Length: 191
Image (cartoon, rainbow, N blue to C red; front, side, top):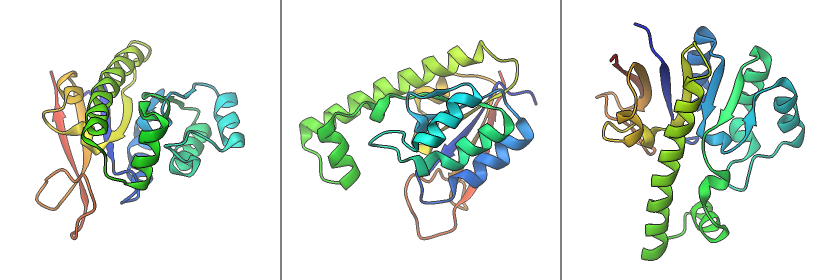
């Protein structure tokens, strides 16, 4: 089956996300890997990849260590690595602190986060469509597993894709740590 996109769901660290990313990227050898965790960074040359490696900084919300292995793989394989999100995920300083500390959000802050999530999703869709026009190869898109829910706007916006996501042994999408084995499931849509 010929896919335009391979979506890979990440857990933001409660399983080894890079292991699955590497398993998908190496046989595919895409021209572009689009990644939520790279926020708004466009690493479309060896020089830009080396620059971020030397700087060892992404943002207040994403540590360099969270993306280091992916950055190194893309450098080694000459793959362009493109952030498809907003800097600091679009959160202001107050929300950044509260989210990082896992503090409870006020009703107003919760509404702000919901609005930002919609904007982020729309931006991700726009970026994916933009890079789809630039490559004849399948594009690997790495986003948080939450964005890969069956009813998500992201998933509904595309055809001809494979989705690889963390799931429990019954095939249910996993969005947070669970007390059972986490495996990966695949779904496809062709046309």
